[in-house]
Length: 433
Image 1: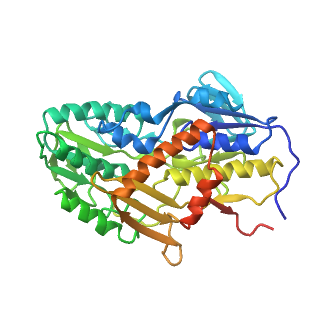
Image 2 (image 1 turned 120 degrees about the vertical axis):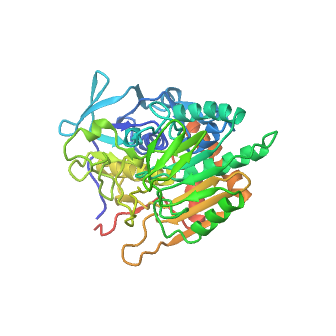
């Protein structure tokens, strides 16, 4: 039997105006009648295409190139807009507190992204520590300013991540792009570069079993004399030295180190709602197991690592995965409201990642991102390299920004292109009658 209910007027609130929240709001508006109210809440006035922030941090592009004004985008499409920080959630009452304003919802989609857990390592981060990051626009801008100073007086460069980190791609990009930038500088600034990662090996990416990923990444780094420290735990950072748990000390003049993530405080403060890191557990449909009207998408969602590593690391939640979660959530809410007569959908959690390595690029494909629990295999797992990857990443950035300007989520031709690659965003929930 297909999922069908009588349509009622509802208020759907989306928290977050990023790669998860904005396309999901668009998809809801596309699927639901205008009588249903959609509100997007964000603590940032601009949408930012986060995957391009390593370029911003190295002053290769401007931040303005990858930002759009959210208010003007939503006003054209009948979506309410509220700029502010969510400070409280009461799931039993179906209410959130934004600054001093209480908002009641019928459905809530949390797409906030993550909070940076900079306090887990002494000396981590640009505000209270001595390292840079590329995790948000403000940090990328600060990193770019520090990079300009570094080029004027270079020294040892450290790039990597601390224990508990889950998104390693930007670190690889930064290391390789920094190397390319230094080689292109006049005069050529040759500095020692060290890549420090808690991954068991380079190219693990928090998921493991990525076919040729380890060999490819190791080869590219060795080609450019980038020193690799794998299975390494950063435990303390001083103004000019990174300390590892094994006692090793790494002097630096510039360090870009990715932090671990955690869920936002308004989720963490509710007993039993999240795991210890503040991430939301969700059912395959995207709903919280205890609160069916509460959905989570993107980085804020709890995903268990496919394997235990000697140094704890997390699972990446890529842009493609985030979009898929949003599409499934919007579809399922439309089914609940009776606007669609269809089976419930779940995200496939397939990931196609494009990484700019300077002289070349690497495309990482994992479909799905979590291997089969029995066989330990994925349907697709490969890493490919070539200059075409860099061109593709630039093209996709501009395509995504165009989608946001036009109010598209995932248009039919994008879904068709994914099908041509043997990929999909969503699939029916199994065992529906």
